[in-house]
Image 1: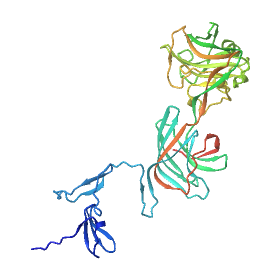
Image 2 (image 1 turned 135 degrees about the vertical axis):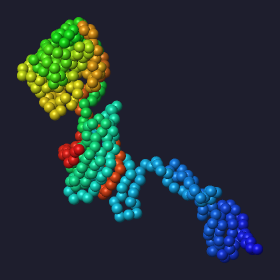
Image 3 (image 1 turned 180 degrees about the horizontal axis):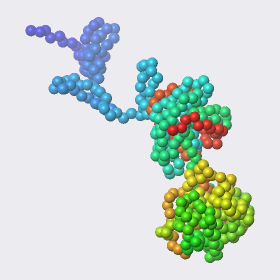
Image 4 (image 1 turned 60 degrees about the vertical axis):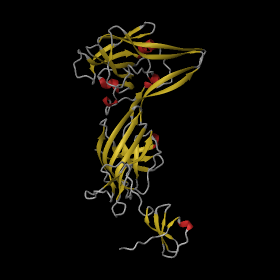
Length: 423
């Protein structure tokens, strides 16, 4: 028969123990031994209960039928923000997916600071999100970027099929960085101007009328008309058909007729003032046999075009439906779009074509003319090449940097740029 050994129990604060005496504390279900102080040796205090969670699970061995020996382990799929591998080894640490940072109003995202003797290196998988107004581009790149600028590599693309390059950027303040660079895109910028006069503001609406591909003219809100001259002798790069078929063709109007129908004066304070009434305006217009049209490009030239399209596109650019048509052959010397108020449904940078009814006027623009009078707010819409609103980068890979680059620089801070790696 075995002897039972009983130990005192209760609240240890109310008990005076002997040295090496055992005591069961009922408050926290823990077994203590007194050796100049209370030392927990068993019970809840030592054997913490195991709990499952979002990333942890409790399992039992197949032979543990009574489930007496729980095992705590990670689930197969865990949800984490970031994770560093190699913490207790001599190997450079691999950083799990983590957001490096974000920049605004610039085409460049810096990753490492540049110096000739730098040993910084960041390499792995980069997830890049680029925001341009309402448009968002998502890119995935496998890249290596070094602080010394050599041995950089870059492979990948984004859902718009526009590839970032790895560039060495020098800022106006003399600092230099290695990182990803994208492009500026043609977007609408709206500004507001207050005009004060004596009698207010008058708006003249200008309409576009298509009777056929051979008979197109402007018409103002008073019914006055000015017809375009068909320049089918100048083939537009927007069509591969011959000059007598439907498609893209150039249409010509003298600047004197253009100013007369629109009411735009010789002096406006915009780039348009560089072109007097001896100049010509050209519209590249697409028309198909389903009674649809679009205005793809518009230019102003100092002299009448004689030898072909190059005479037109090498002068003043009013509008270009698709900027990639002009790249890398954009020969325009000045942007005169600041002199116009564009209507989104006509000057549309998508691939949409508008339906038209032959002979019916289509509003193409509004021309604001000040008659001295009260203060009036005028809306101006410009087409400008603008950097992204924001670039955000997440990273998964090797990250060895002595210091992080600044994310405060904007596009106007960039002094020069050199491509060091491209796909």
